[in-house]
Image: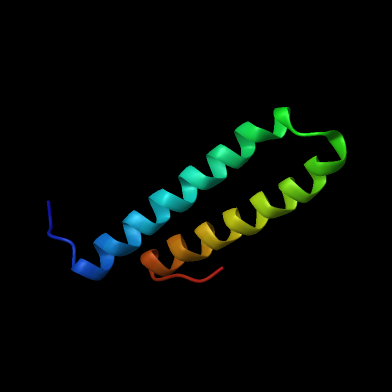
Length: 63
């Protein structure tokens, strides 16, 4: 297994934290009122988009 640079390790930790946030947000969808769901779904989509962009940067590709 190759050693990761400190920047890569930090990036992986950030991505893990973001994915945990998205998971929590999605888990909350069932608990919120119907009118709040749409806003929460938009927030989840924005965070997921950020995660996808970060992963693409780690892979050296772009979305």
